[in-house]
Length: 194
Image: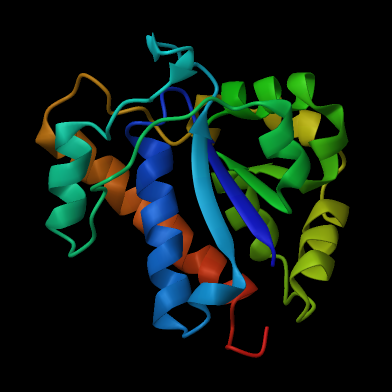
């Protein structure tokens, strides 16, 4: 079962929305049981209960904008990006350059499977992909010189962080993630056969 990990900073806004949109596209294609999609944050810290980090729920504004689209973030709890999560992921989608950089530093073996979300979109635009998921990811990786090139891109390569902003900022962020998720799904999950 291919595993997709979506990254942002606190795992309470962008990455939970990305996770929810990707899960929605998998469900819509009738292949929900074929993929494991989850999210984590590069800067997730907080109190522990009996030595276990319990995480935070998605931000209220993120929950609101997703509910307005018929999706829910109910039950989401933030978790930290750790090497084990990167090791098991077949595809890592980073919302911003700092998240990609942190993933590459923490677990260099993820290099060929980790992409910025906007970078992934641009690579998909270069042509059709093989039908097998892992071959499609390998093809996407072959279309770039190095993931470090993406880390060096300008600020417009990032999905902007809405944290601390008003609902309209969250709406703008959700709309961008929704579009990127739909385009990724169209390329990676053309049918239930994939």
